[in-house]
Image 1 (tube, rainbow, N blue to C red):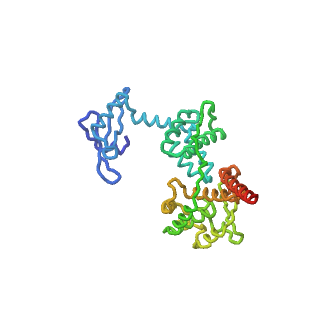
Image 2: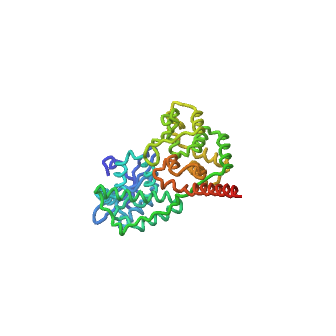
Image 3: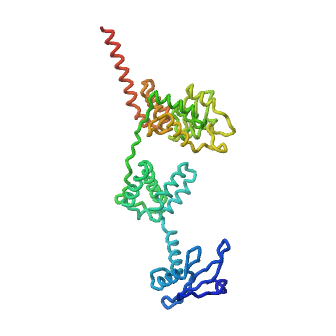
Length: 380
């Protein structure tokens, strides 16, 4: 005990070896602070048991703690401090997954996806793997995490979580901080993800959606949705769109941060130009500014309201679904080749556009049928 505590009056309780002194809480309340005295291995031990209010400590509970510590069923305060110091020292010399993550995070502080990765790490990875070294991670642990997450998360989310574990472990090995685990003993099974869902809208649904857009009270978000309809732009590209990206003179929209990582441009059609020309200008650099002129963030409520009012299918995904609908409409028209469609969608590779190829094939078959009808009618 400190010198100040020694001067305070000790008050015995009816329990042997238990006493208290009177102190005050941080908000000024008077409370009892309980202590215990006992001998262990021939040595006198005198230590705090707890505070009356903060720890809900009572004389009886303090007596129970004293008995456990005498019997060795519970650590003394000194033993606990020694153990914690030893563990802290050991952790400083062990590259655990958490320590590797902190280093990984530091070296990728400018990475745009770091915030999302940080949420995945804190929520899903740290509770299971944070205190383990890469060598202590086993396939069974990864399998259990995958199975448990799939009960409440989408396969794509689970895939990202497992991929992040792999990246952290690989980062440690590449930097020479920890050895690479034996991959013959550690296997990362990824959940199966169906990324080939292709949504489309009928002419009636397009018409209903336009009516719902024009009727919505959130003009800003409604205008953003209409621009998505006529350009096929991604949600992130629309939210980040700045006036400096809009080239009315050339008739192009510049996408500086496309998903493929390369700056690209898409042409304006007449309707997308009209939409942009009618957007009110503010002091913000963003076409669709949020609070304080910063980038717009929360649009899901308004978008869902527009979707529901239009009577679109429950599983239709705005704005992602509008992008698919835009591409499907062009492909099925038979008037746009796959290469051009790839450029309009700013796809990095033609493979990403191939999901729409069958729609173009259907259009070509219809055209062949028309040729047959014309030829046959001429032969009669």
